[in-house]
Length: 288
Image 1 (spheres, rainbow, N blue to C red):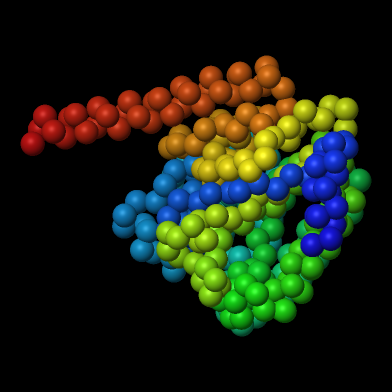
Image 2 (cartoon, rainbow, N blue to C red):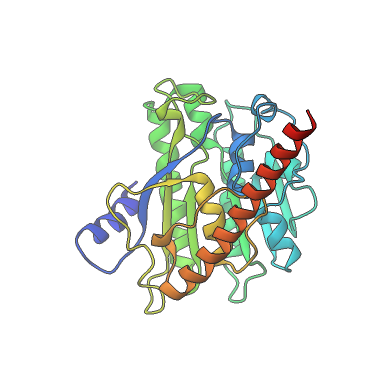
């Protein structure tokens, strides 16, 4: 991925911060449905939920998509149709595509690429949050494995898309490219091995005077997937989802004042979750 590699190397050389790549650690199971729930709620799958990766139903738990929708943010989506099963009414516009034909590496990716780039053409965008979920890398892993030449092609296509998005970004835009899971040496996922749980998170703030402090992160930074939820809530000025268990990532917040405010909300929110859980357990034991 030549463009991403060059952008990362500028950070290493001490130049103006560009994009940064960090470890993005999932909780098991490393199945797509459960990862999407964690990435939007900040919580972990229940025992029953862990076995249900097919035919997901509407997500009733508080989540980022719901919060953005409730405050009037315009949320657009294209890609893996699993999102629509979870959020059937929250998107202002959606273009879902079937996700289980693992031998089709290109149809969904091409559609997502075309849609994302078309939304970045207007000087005044018709969106506040733009989500694309591509499938080619995942499907290539399932079909050919991670070391096949086709994987090189899919990664080069992703690199080119990132480059084109960066070229069209406005000064206050934030680009996040995340893997919902990793894959084994055979290209599979769904379990709890390190290879399956260790995904990647790439972050690019358009480098301006206002946000140079973003991404002053350390080598080998490891971010739990659920920690992205309160962090995004903070950055987009929405309430943290009620059942979130994640902790705000200070390295991704642009000012100390904003971090202190968001951390106070985060502490109160997580404390409420644990307090309610504790009293519910206490009541259960006292009645048994």
